[in-house]
Image (cartoon, rainbow, N blue to C red; front, side, top):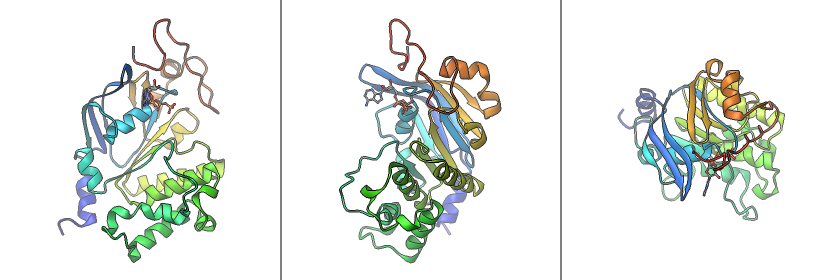
Length: 273
Ligand SMILES: Nc1ncnc2c1ncn2[C@@H]1O[C@H](COP(=O)(O)OP(=O)(O)OP(=O)(O)O)[C@@H](O)[C@H]1O
């Protein structure tokens, strides 16, 4: 049965979801991420948490090797390139680089999540159609399925791109701010989908810039501060008042983006000193 999806899933489950050693990202003079060494367990939901500019998106980009980086990354025991080619990883970026006037429907967008499995001609098979229908239903998009993506609200678009990632049926799902701009009902739908994936042994990493709902959703937290890993562990031991104060500055708000900490005199608060 070598090469079957079930066999691949078994192999993937034997590894941590993501292992980084000395991961760092620099944009010219800006040091966005420095020396992050961490092992994210598979079969868990991990939250990547920190204030705006703390390096969360840079870490995701480095994990996917979408930006030049220092250090090493393994996704389910493979290099990021191998993991992508094996269909092990799906991602939802913070903002989609999409021409919203381009005439594609929600169903087209979600179907694109299956392209890697369809071969060069991209002809959907029954299994592809079923996966697309299931993802559309999971995100409550049935009535919007034939609407053009440009004619949706921001939250509805976000749900469509989450559905595209779900349709990929990947072992590891990386989501950058999946709840940004979505209403409570949609957020609850996305949370239920992510929990369902975790319960089926899949691994999920979500980037989140505030603390609302994080402790209830995730199994572990990576707390980033100015591009460095402040702490990694279960929410109960990671999101202590002391660490929250250190990562978010005084008085984090639970209902909105935390205030940025006051910048030190000589350097931006968002960059590693
Ligand atoms: N393309 C870029 N060029 C230069 N600097 C960048 C670039 N992208 C990010 N940065 C800088 O790198 C640092 C980390 O940014 P990053 O987007 O990783 O943070 P983040 O925690 O994801 O923030 P947010 O919550 O606002 O999405 C910030 O200081 C940011 O200004």
